[in-house]
Image 1 (tube, protein in one colour):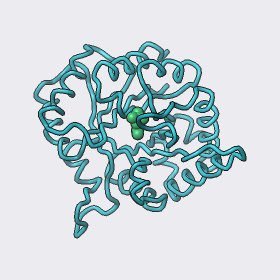
Image 2 (cartoon, protein in one colour):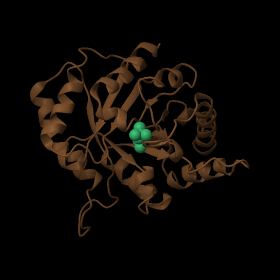
Image 3 (cartoon, protein in one colour):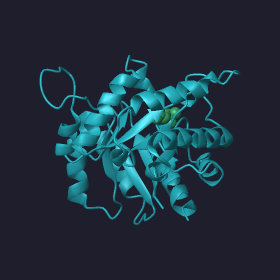
Amino acid sequence: MQKKIVIGNWKMNPLSLKEAEKLLIEISESFSLIKKTEIIICPPFIYLESLRRLLKAKNYKLKLNLGAQDSFWENIGAYTGEVSAEMLYNIGVKYVILGHSERRAMGENNIDINKKIKSALSSGLIPIICIGENVRDEKHEYLNFVKMQIEESLDKISRNNISKIIIAYEPVWAIGKGTLPATVEEFREMSIFIRKILSDKFGIDNVENIRIIYGGSVDEKNAEGFIKDGHADGFLPGRASLDSKKFSKIIKICEVLNK
Ligand code: PGA
């Protein structure tokens, strides 16, 4: 049985390292022991190294890992503005979010994401792959859309590697301010659909332990339903991860409900 996983996507927040450290300290000090839930914080690149040092120096009982919000597919070279998976691995980062809808909106496509996933895996990072439709149409075209995202972004990933990935189902219409989260039923259906596509492609034995988590307006009030009735393997909260109290409650819900 895999642990549940809660991944805080801080996006382009907060504005200063001081605030980032304060938030990380608040989260780390809100629990003494969490056994059945993995906790990952994904801050902007610029804070990763300092936050890693801070965690090491404080040696909190609550163990949490750091993740990045993106990584490039080449390892090293003339790629202005990019950061490679291997560079991240070398500073102690363990996870990377790839294919987030906010990056796709800036032009990233499934082929780019596929290259990034391969590079992350070969550098030793665990990719958290975001998929999700922009809209839900009555003809259910969104199912084909999600299927294509999975098939293209996971093209030629080896059967050995596939079990390492985490899939975050994040419908774009549910992300950010002024939106409603997916319903528990919508998530449940989609997670069954996603696992079926994965098992058709990679074989059931290789994909049964892949965690399929939910993201999109997750908070401390709706998290319980997604775990209890939606069988979510965890969450990728954005806004709620910037509030240590809300984020800690989400972790607690995962911990208590993980039997
Ligand atoms: P949100 O963001 O929780 O603020 O809706 C989620 C995400 O984009 O990962």
